[in-house]
Amino acid sequence: MGHTVAKTALLTRSTGTVVRTALTLLSGEISESQCETFQVLYTEQHDASVDFWYQTPMRLVLANLNYSSWSMRAWLALRLAELPFKTFDVAMKSQPDWKERILQFSGAGKVPVLVDGALTIHESLAICEYVHELRPAARLWPEDRALRARGRAISCEMLSSFSTLRSLMPCNVRGRSLRTPTSPALDRDLARIFDIWEASLATSPGPYLLSDHLSIADCMYAPVLFRFRTYGVALSDTVRSYSDAVLSHPHLVELQHIAASTDPIAEYDAALQ
Ligand SMILES: N[C@@H](CCC(=O)N[C@@H](CS)C(=O)NCC(=O)O)C(=O)O
Image 1 (cartoon, rainbow, N blue to C red):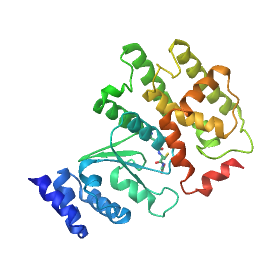
Image 2 (cartoon, helix red, strand yellow):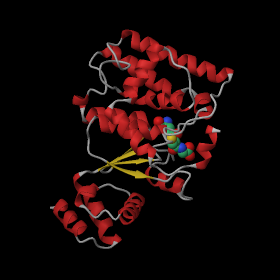
Image 3 (tube, rainbow, N blue to C red):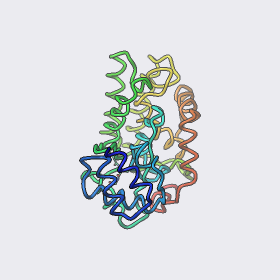
């Protein structure tokens, strides 16, 4: 009954009050601030279709997919799982209220955030795990327990480490740097990443880190492959083959197409000089 009312309300393409009421009906426990944000999205995107709010309830709140490596990871897991979702770009570093927009969804103040009905999930790895649980058939983690443990360990390491890589080589999928940054701390980050990749690929049937299909571990490291291409980092033959396999995967090609047409962010493009 509630869904019917919500559907009717949406179809009226009426004012924010109606939209807010409809969304409250749809999601039950949704907070007032989230309703306000959805109302803004609804107005901004002029998307009055029932699909947006009703049939495809998941929304990935993210930043510009040319620059936001954490957003890419969650986006990729959702695409690999072939789950229907819509995105909402908070316009990070482009609009003055970008931080407030994120805070409407997560007190952590960072993207990505996955909104699934009344549930909001922050942290890219937690989102990937949630996606895996929703669609186990996508085999985002391998069935082998030891491989799964390894995949989780190297994914956690991606989250907790490599700060020099992040600051000296900001992600810029379409960008090409005029120089390759170097520093002892960066060399240590690169050496550890190559070590992780070489060790994983040595026990994988390939061409990916854990198996013959992309896993969450590959989602975690794919933005590093973009960084290495952007900044001209030299790759061994093994890593070159891995990079070629990942970057030519249909969903990575799709991601690169999206990244190619996003608005530029000068602050990040400056790192290419
Ligand atoms: N550990 C977080 C990191 C998320 C993160 O740092 N996201 C960046 C965008 S790529 C962000 O929201 N930055 C905004 C800020 O730090 O104020 C995750 O895995 O999701």
